[in-house]
Amino acid sequence: MLAERWRPARPIETRCRGPRSTSRSRSVLSAAGFNTSALARSTAILNLKRKRGQRQSAVRPHKLPMEGRLVFPLLLLLLAAFPGGLVRGDDDAAEELQVETLAKPETCSVLSGVGDTLQIHYTGQLMDGKVIDSSLSREPLVVELGKRTVIAGLEQSLIGVCEGQKIKATIPSHLAYGKKGYPPTIPGDASLEFEVEVISVTQQTPWQKMVNDVFPLLCLALVPTLLGLVGLYLYNKAKDQKPGRKKAKDKKSKKK
Image (cartoon, rainbow, N blue to C red; front, top):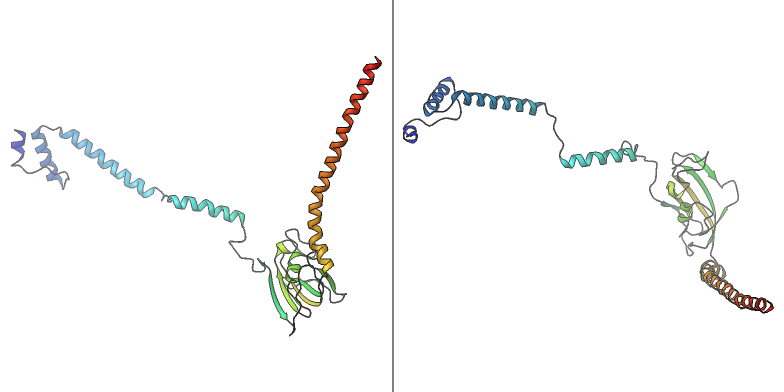
């Protein structure tokens, strides 16, 4: 009966267009036996929840996506690790050794290598131009490559040069005096510039080459051999003492 009554009638509208449509739908629902007061109460509650949700969405702050949540802590760690590196770059600090040839003779037959002895004149300065040391007023400095008589950056820049050559070496701090520096002349983490003139290059003799190259290897080979011989001597000595102790015990037992 309800289905036959509803078909010729106008279908029920879910959206209320105005007061007339609302009263008409209520009359149809009341005729069908529905509780219109409960329906109106539930509709009002739904509308109130929608308004609250719109207000909360308008006030609620925008959430960062998951990628943004991961990147933000990494940026904070970078800022903490490099407090001045991201704000301003240190243009005066060199990152690697740079060697520039200022003058070179026409004939360069002998190039320096590890083990050779060089006589040089040098002028060292900070990156701002402040001179820290110079040998121009003294005798030339004698440098034997491979012996670490000078800082590592200067020694590396002197490999592959010839007599009469002038070079300019930009040395980073980790190849110079490092974080500690050389107070009060050289601050910590300071890069240096050296202008070097090679006065003479003396190549190592075969005997010096043998001493420098072969002798350390022989020492490394002899040390385990000597330790083995000492261990064998102590073992034999301890082994020889055991029969003597047994003989002494046997003599004491015979006397008793």
